[in-house]
Image (cartoon, rainbow, N blue to C red; front, top):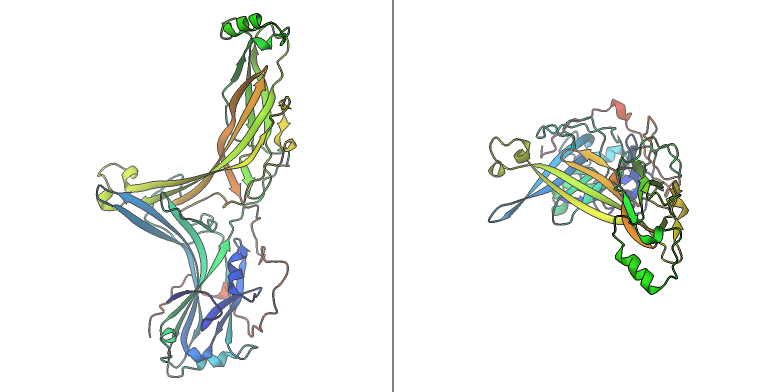
Length: 452
């Protein structure tokens, strides 16, 4: 039976650096190329015959297919990689205590079997059910997607997970739990490597910004007149109001745009620069009028998309890919920055105003952008401003486009444990003889673990 890895089991997994409880292991973060070292601690009283340890990565997602009578949920699973180690196998099935030949651990209660795995750099297993699509991957060799889980009960659902799976076959008949094949699962948290963008906090050095052409913002009011007197009589003000939309009314048109780099880092600062350009104005206006910033908000939206092969009953013949696959999506919106300036004249908006002068725009902790078999996750940023000129307020969209969120973790090249914690945990039990180097072991070999 499948169980969560726990020290109360007859056999369980411990990972370096060791902790008093296995619940801390899922909080440790790994990236591509990092080594996973530890021990499998086995109670010899359960008399194991064979012990295997699997290291797996997989993507699981769900699609909902509705018909006139019901809604069917169709799960899909794509294996990203699978490595297997044979940790122990009894030479003589009749000698059920052969595992004692490996030696007891320091506590004298369990046998410790060391192991080592390494996170691969890319996806290793194919998924032949998918044809090519620009938004998704369909062949091995692409980067491993980060750990991610989205379950909302509607729309798209997806999960990228990495875990160690301990499988033990025993000969003990004194306990139903021991007699059954034991499976213990330890989750691992994976972060896909993506270096930090090469720009400063002021946005300098960024070669590529989000491409967006904003709509012009026009102010048309008699208050633009340099000789306008706010204390004029009620009759004159009423006359001005009647001619508010007259063709000869003074006007000024501006373009307000926000420059945002196309890439950002989770939990990092995001440099945003506002640019103001006077597109046109009435000939009577010698200089462009002053524009004040009243409010600015930055919204970040995530969108998870899935592509699931349709069942045969849900396909239309000769209609191509649109009926061969079922597409679903799940969107989530959040404001990451908002400032309002309601008192006084607000903030003078000028060309090159850096939003960091108003406050830090920080990207929240997010799953990095990824795409893999049948699943992709991308982000869209939306900047809206409220400006005022000559007593007239206008709202404008300063930027709207896709932004790539990275982890900020540099790729690992032949360096083990790039994300290991600086401080070690409790003293580890003696590991005994170390296993052969990882490169010398047989990888990608599926071992049958049925009853022998």
